Image 1: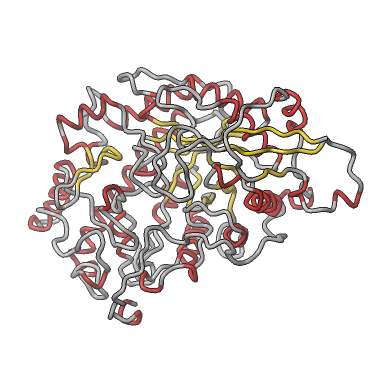
Image 2 (image 1 turned 180 degrees about the horizontal axis):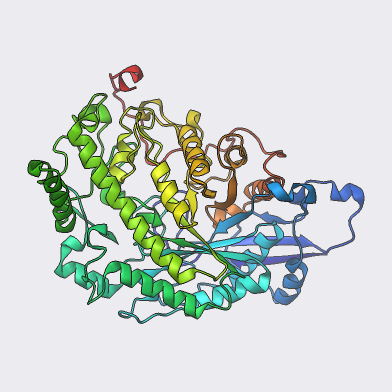
Length: 551
């Protein structure tokens, strides 16, 4: 006998801006054979036979046998080898961005329950969810609505999964993978409309409403509170509301520190076509608070003229390093002025991280939950001397300087896990003219966390379902070069994940990660023609600069 449940697992209406997503509800037909005592031969079979999801077939109502299905699924997990427990890398799965609705309720709870049960059956450790500032504190300062998250946390506990929560103080919408729009709280947007300098600004005066500028971290610009105080009050309210779950169900709190929840500047915004891969991006230091800080830093070393503005020769969002005076092979980045500017720009970012993590540490100390912070995997132009795209994002990483060791040390100081993206990417998948090296970047960050003495966790940067991507994560999860991964969070639960082949790949991946990444039957290459880099359109005119000139 087989039980089948048709489950709608798409949530708030999405924007149709990615081929891998749909604005329609999708249905995953979940089939599980009635459990019998397996023979030794059956136990040896691939774990994908224990839980299979057929491709989406269309919207359908729920089966009345929900309770019976729940009983069959609850204790059903992929078996793991106990001999590998010390090497085991727990796998979490990101929930949809719109798991909680704009009204503050849990979206499609029955569908969520079915999906969580399926993930439990696959052997995953737990799930990750964004806790949106723009939803929870939507109704006014210090007015928090935790109802949707309360329902989710209770559900996760009932099923026996763990939960990673992201304190998401940024806007959802306008970046890679954003399928819905969740702005900052309306009362915050009102303050921004009165004082546009509260948000990051580029040299052309373009304002970015994704995240409050770190330039005003310690200024009472949000109705009598500083941004750091507002973030702290939010986290404190979360701790108070979920004190009975933190450390048990909620095992990790990731502290959002910038756009996309990452400790960085919004130097490569996709919204309105401002930036396209593999552009170098632009410095975000032109709001009045950042300009005042830069002027003070220049005055302190008696170089007042250096503090009047950011680099004049840093180019535009979609240029290449060699097109600019600042980022070219022997450009201004390597001058005394360039070093001064980058030390200030990257130092401000580190100071912001320090303030955020210090606040979070005080609030969550003694709860039993880990703290983590996310760093972006900016791999394009990594093989050039200046590492232009990293510099505009605030990572002072060049051919001559390790920009990730200071970040890792800052996180180690607070006992925070460094969460890094692009674990699934390979150098050979990237366009030659972009001078990418995600593998080199991951190796550098693994070594930085090892030297700093902090844990390293990972994510995939783009939605990938193919065995080749999973195999790459398995390879990078090991400690052959620098830190091994303490956990991996897979992006993300959606329609495509529950398609038959993709689901089999996930189940096999989870099993292999439970064995330390040393045992895998996943393919080494991408067999499904996945988009391997974002927004890249091959130009008809091949760039004349040779790769040698860039390095």
